[in-house]
Length: 416
Image 1 (cartoon, rainbow, N blue to C red):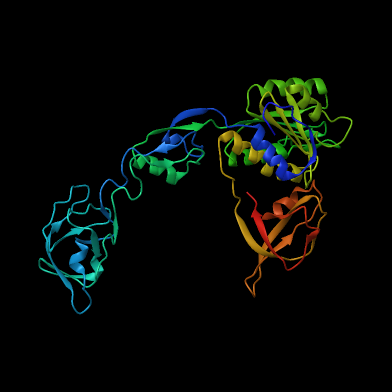
Image 2 (image 1 turned 30 degrees about the horizontal axis):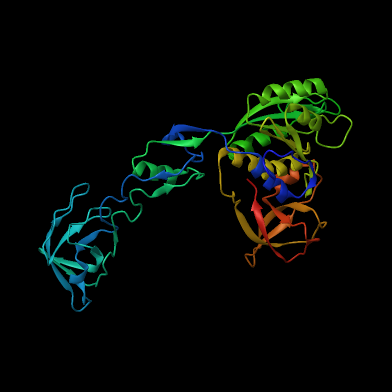
């Protein structure tokens, strides 16, 4: 798809095609500069270079004695190499040089003296007075990290799109970087819809009412994926109100999500609202996926708008796939997010239909006798949350298969 050309509506789209469309149509949010202690969980907006060598000196990786490796050649249990102990290298201090035939005691992380290029571990030596016997022959660089071995000055320390976790934050601190440019955190606006819904905090239900379980569940997933969450409430089945409230919240957020109103019916306002919110409007009307086929995706004033099915299992399934992909795109992630998986043996047959990607809920069990991990399908209608709570993860039946057979090895995507 060439940017700028009219976008054609995709009806009953392949999931992969929808994920590609998300990459093409949406871009990362602008950058902001944050102190590194506040930047965890964000994605870098540009490459970061190191301004110094890391480490800045040759350092020991063990407790032992710094020596010139060539002076240990031929050493063994019966014929040790002998060194004169010239003293100790103090931590955080420059290491005094030594003369040929000498060594210095050095601790893990300590600086190596000039004219040394290896460290013999303390357990491979025997000390008598100021004489150190080494029972091991050393290679140059053994038990040593050389200056610049981790990072050379001027080289890229972290690339654009890198997620800043604790290791990355620590790396930045180690090279003196105290603030970084990261993409702004996406903010999600969320509406539930339907006259049958009431707040999940409601104590009493009237006949025909159900509590809105999707709002708190999607809120949790959104925060897990690195987004802020603004709950707009429950929209009534009134198009004028539906559109007015949607326009208002779209001004305040980066990504708008509707739950419900994407199923076929005379009171379905989500698709109409997407067409009215901004150009180009509706992009996808239906995805060849189970559960979650009646999914809508739009681009309104350059912002993504996602219409989730109202059934809780379908809503969570779709948001975990496509909502997460949109969040990643807005947040500046450049690599595919890999979900944790486990390999297991399928406990029973799973039926499917070609041309559709099926996501099947499974419970993991460990067989007591064999220790084998099995995946037991958990079946239930799309409105039954109890079956979702019983599941440990999902397995995917690709569109080219008519199902899976008991005894097959399957990859289970662990539920987050």
